[in-house]
Length: 155
Image (tube, rainbow, N blue to C red; front, side):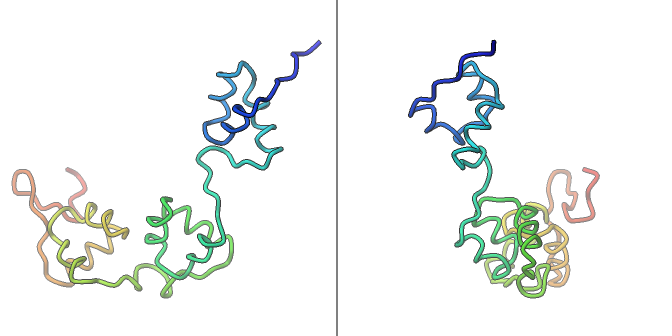
C-alpha cells in the first residue's frame, strides 16, 4: 500500500509557487512531484517563473531589449527569447541603434569601466566602448594606472 494522500490546507495551497516545490515538499514530508502536480493542477506558475502579462508583452519590440529587461526585472536573454518566440522585431531595427545617448548617459562614459557603465545603462560593454571611443573619451583609470576599457580583460 502507498502513502496516505497529503491533506492540503489553505495555508499550504497559499504557499504553492512562493517557494521551490522541493523546499515545500521537504517541509511537508512529501515529494516534490506531489507538490508539482498540485501546483500545476491549480495553474500556479513555478517559483521564480515570470508571468508574461499583456502589459509586459506590449513592451516587446517597442523599446530596446535591455531596457525592457531592466523594467521587468528579467535578463536581456529572457526578453530576447520571448520576443523572438513571438516573432516580434527588435526596437529600432535591432541592437542598440535606438539607444538615446542623453547628456547624462554620455557623462557616465569614462567614469568607470565600460562593463560597469554598460550594466548601469542596460547596454553591452562593446556598445559603451564604441560610444566612448567615438567621443574620444579616455577609459577610466583604476588601480596602478591601468585603463579599464573593453580591451583590458586580463585584469
